Length: 515
Image (cartoon, rainbow, N blue to C red):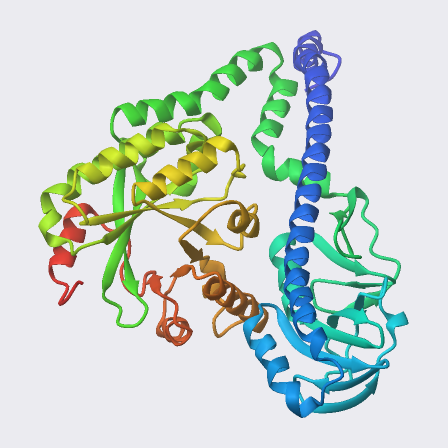
């Protein structure tokens, strides 16, 4: 169409005007989002560094206690003390070797017994810590050595880099996280490098331990702010773009659009459209049913059955996850209570809770009403902490968890190792179970590195005397691997898919033995 036509010029002006009107909120919105993303990255980097420092302090506490225990043995013959050195390795977590020195000569080791190697205190930062590339036994395998001296006597204890690297990966997640000791630093692949440490363009964070001479470095690449914006604020980008195109008309549309998810979810709650499905949890040794997880599904009147990942995050964002879970618990109790005679004693029933629940004391009343629907000791309620949002250890949360335990409710960390702060939760909260995320289980027989992480989680759980549930078990190879490592409970499609209440009760009645 010719540009000289009056009709076209008017049409072009009508098209251009909304862009001009919308440019200001678009620019302000993008600037605000970028600032918020940078603040979030700074906060995440600081939290990650704090968690890493706390974890490595914990590891060094273990080896420091071991060094204090064996230092009085320095000077005695190796034949007399080597069993005591080996006992320390077995007893202490994270400890790889223990060694005794006399006059800067390492004369006794927990590995070989009698030894004869020089060990210069000057190699250690402040005479205490040395991040080694390796030693004569394992020259290409890094170690973190802790030295405790008393005159001409000394004790050296070491941490294997596998523990250090696993901690860096689990705490750092997708972020790069490095441990620096003196002029050397360790990356998440377990390799030791010389200074300088990696440079981080965004939210560069350096945090030193107040107790030991090491520091943690983390941060993000230049494009991380935009990546976070596109990941977390993608709907807002759409709204901003729509504002730029549709101007004033879009303001009305945006307000309706911003409200519509909450209204639709509230309507669905009132209509009892969120219904429970049940997936069995089996024992790791004989695969008999030990419990089940109640999973929420949305029976939408027009869309059909909607998966939880399509609406749970929105419910958490809108502040509706608490009433939604309360409705689910009521339905589960109403549906299962008439069949209480089918369940063995202490049949475990898991229900997911989010960060909002942990600040809401009414959760205790919900659990009390739920348990009251069943005969005593028939059902053990397990609340599974999801980690889509960070759970803060406030006084309310601590009191709530204490009261829940007093009620007989157990606490589990869901998808352990993949969320905000799994290791932090172990320090802050008293938990009973760890649920190993399906992403680690799926790597059994596929990826050796992920298996190291899986084995570390299993080892950590055993040392902390926590019971384990491995989810996402889909084949016999995975089942055999987990059973061989004494994982307590298994869950996944190999045993059963999520099912309706009728199918669940029918399958439960068919179980040959439940105890």
